[in-house]
Length: 294
Image 1 (cartoon, rainbow, N blue to C red):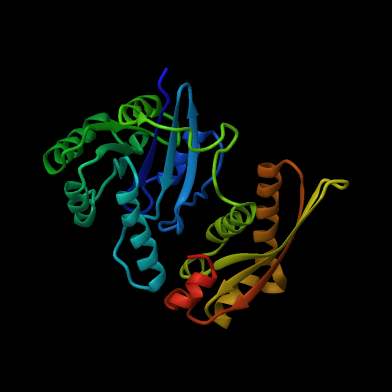
Image 2 (cartoon, rainbow, N blue to C red; image 1 turned 90 degrees about the vertical axis):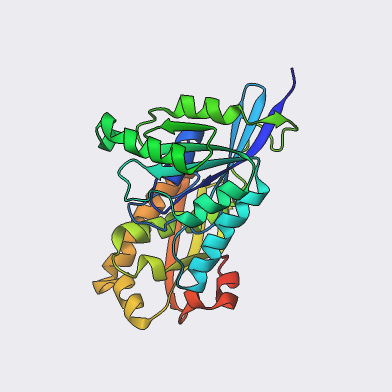
């Protein structure tokens, strides 16, 4: 039997559930998820292994109007992915604001002659008949090969979506070994989990002005213990003060939540040490962005 494989870009506006879908498909958390938009900053690769085929998904940052160098880097990364993949999976939200897809995305999809599938997410939050105007708009505005209503959170419609995506696979190699679900390093995953907790525990500009780097990582097999030292970068002293919190309560809450999630993810004990550093205007500095992994 001929082996099939292909690369699939998951694109769309911010906060439509791209990372939730990827985690649901893989049955494992490889991308962080928060209720806040613009959580995903890097391209996240997830590998699905099927019987006789392999799908390599690339979860991209939400495409939105850019302001800072960080946001420009995020959007450029997402748009560049469209040229590198075999199939495009566009995600929109059922509870959309018209138009549901930014013109920059629609124009790009029209110019690229590749198989494209639309997943209308969060159908569990609306009445079924409310989908019809959105489906009609998508059919009129784009030349999509399939439109599939889903609920990524509740795994509704995922099987049908996977069938439509599989139709675009071509004879090709097994790009990754069967036991591999992502190409992300342990350091990257740790930094992302910490950043996820910052999004949950802080408000306003703090999550968007924070970045995380891992300074030290060591696993002791005898104690089954992973020791981690990580640094949270913020842009002002005021942000640092809020992130640390009164008597260190905020940073302790973030660290405790991150440690518990990491222990669940890795299956062994984790000792996590967090520090906060002010790096003025890092989100607007291209050199700082590269240094912080963006």
